[in-house]
Length: 309
Length: 280
Image (cartoon, rainbow over all chains, first blue to last red; front, side, top):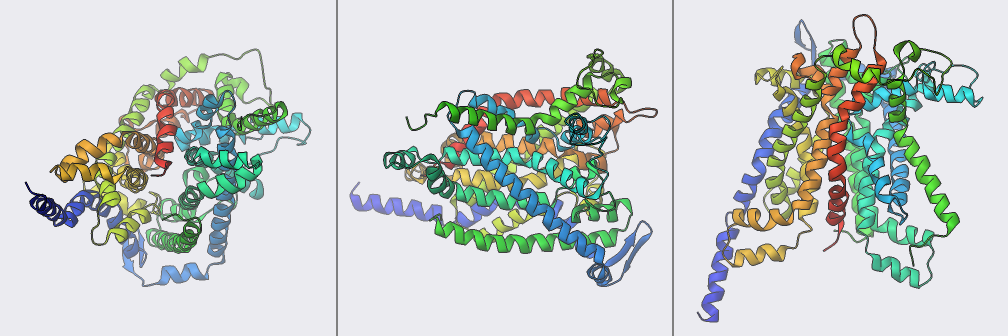
């Protein structure tokens, strides 16, 4: 074969491959899309439809935007929205800080590192509902370790029920949420840190850069893409964190731990007000979509700054 | 040399690790302590750290209080395994397409997958219940498997796509030049190279499936024999009394099989995530 015919043959093969590429790609993606459409999109459409209905066990009646109007007028709902964002920012912030500290510790070259890495994982690996049983007992004022220890050390005068007061219940729930979410953040940041080229550190070290300088100027910029995408995922999950609050406090005491998702569940499932619950669900989706868009805009900027595609 | 620490630095590091791990492991310690206390001692105030009557009695009694306990543990693992297998079957081809091919509406489709992350089961519970009823899946294993799969597909695609993008394209191009078809290349060139990534994504999906059974189980399934462990544990909240010590014992024993599996896989997990992070 001459060079020319060979080239033509390659070109033809490329063409044959190129032509059905879009079709082939769609065939690969289609099963996942169809599945999601049935199990997520259909219920979502149904939720939007329900949100314009006065719906309960008795039946449905079209009421227009009344459900939304009620929510926008309700001061209690405004407080819930604010509380949910406060819950999300505080919890995600703590998860990222603790995750960063944890990953740095587990990345340090000290004996026992492999064991420590294993010991960090359990909260992530076990079912959330089971971890919460442990926390439920820890927070118990009479039989729990925290209250017992506090009294022994003289910090507390008597038994303290962590979940019985508005403030302490909210922050206790945050602590548990952080406990559930930190290991995964730690693991992903650790993986990102290990992906940073050693050459960079060595070059900096030769130039006399200290540990803190290397962390700030090499580690942080290098793991930034992972850090920001972890932050978004973590924010969405924390916003919708349901089981932890439900098992610990069911949104109480007096609504102190009621976030949007708990409010939605209470309205729709506990009180059978399907229409009003659906309106809340739609608002959750809208708020999260807005938040994500703003965040992704910010993410693009960060990525460009650090030269990531 | 660069990694060497002075003695005070080392001590500081170990103290920090100890504090971090105390926070992480405290609830497990508390559960273990509670499981050792006899029931009448459990509700004793003020709190006692140690007492003479600690025993492992609860670990044998629990099987009688909740006879189906073994079944619940099995159900949990079975459901999580099925969810993982089915999710991966959807995720692998889709992630490959997103990582390697150009097609119309690609980024829009990817965006839709990401958006699914925003709806947890709790948001869609009522309509989801109706959909599952229409499909005739209520009160079967499928009632807990199907929603689990749907909510894990996006995360799986997202994770695997970024891993696949890091496998050099040249290898595939070489296969095409030799006349290999796309499907053949996916099967014989890409997948073998992606094994570490597949393990990572598989384990992450399994953990997700294992962790999130509670809500679907209490909402979509009334059949006792099919309940997973997190839902089954609530049977210890019985007719007359709550046998908390047995509940704690059952919780710890119940998660043990998965912890052991995880212990073997964690090495690959960290290594796989790391490999995925290496730049081309």
